[in-house]
Length: 193
Image 1 (cartoon, rainbow, N blue to C red):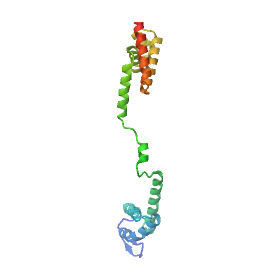
Image 2: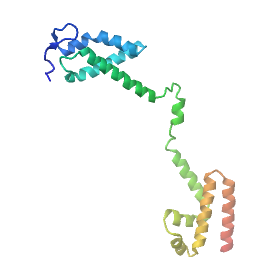
Image 3: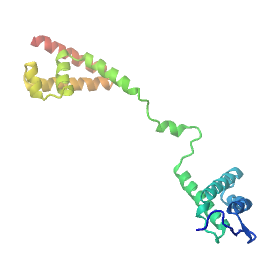
Image 4: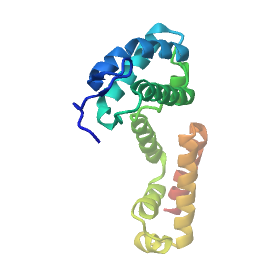
């Protein structure tokens, strides 16, 4: 390949010139060709500018002795086709209605859930809280939790099951069901004591 400043026949008149000069001479032809792709003048000018930017950036890849006009037209056609394919995947959303439906809720929602969970845990009986903590949070087996609390494994299973059901009802917004279960559990705990 010849160096960039090597003389070669120009695209229009056949006499030797610099490649950059030939690119400048081809701007009117590029504009006319861009108009075949774009109806809007500003879009056509953007396409010409993108073609010129890519062409000048890759001028060292141009083969002297070939037609500069054909090379730039190929760059323009490829740029247009790439942009066209890209635009088909994009959706016009002028009033941002689609964007609102695709939005991810704010991360602070987790704080509200954590507060609700704390409130629900507070409504559980102390026995249920302890069983749920030992099995759920501490990761003990039912047998290990039963050994620690001094009761049967079946009792721990029952307490954990009722605590999970009560919490699920509370988190679903069924506060009345949660309250009745908690009161019944408190009554059972008093009778057992």
